[in-house]
Image (tube, rainbow, N blue to C red):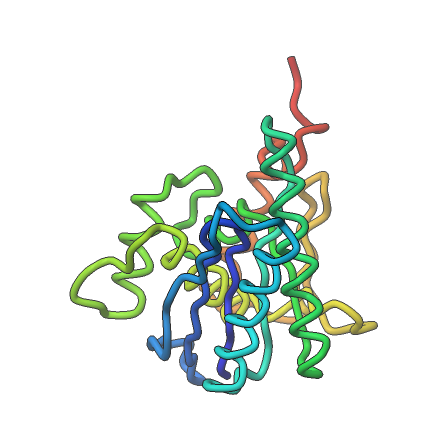
Length: 209
């Protein structure tokens, strides 16, 4: 499976593509960052990002695209612009006629590191290890996009617009269900995601105190 991951951002949008074989071994195809000029109006910046996403899709022909979703942040302006980039990215994916999945940051962190609260340095280190790279992808947005792609390739669920594609499900309350036997990697991801949801890491409304 060839998966494209997108870490949305208006100033820097991470774009990564990985191939994952039947044994769940991942290899790097492409990684980069789309940048936009801060002096331009937002709609022109979004056009720049969208053109970069279109170019990667055309050049590397992913089978599916996964995008990291913003769940909650203190900076409302940052959330707003990131959501705008998400919308532009989703339009690119729809225009290309590709299936798409959206994963929360905690899901991505849990998938690649087993820790839904992992920091950027830990994610960079794990992505480097998983892909067998000689050095971490930089900037962090680039590594994050690869982590999003790996998350989807390993998890293999959550496609938007699909009625019944998920084999593994983790509810907001942290309840884990599956339709069949899980691989060790799937179980590790699912258990980590369930633990994070039970403590409110994914949904701030679940936090206590």
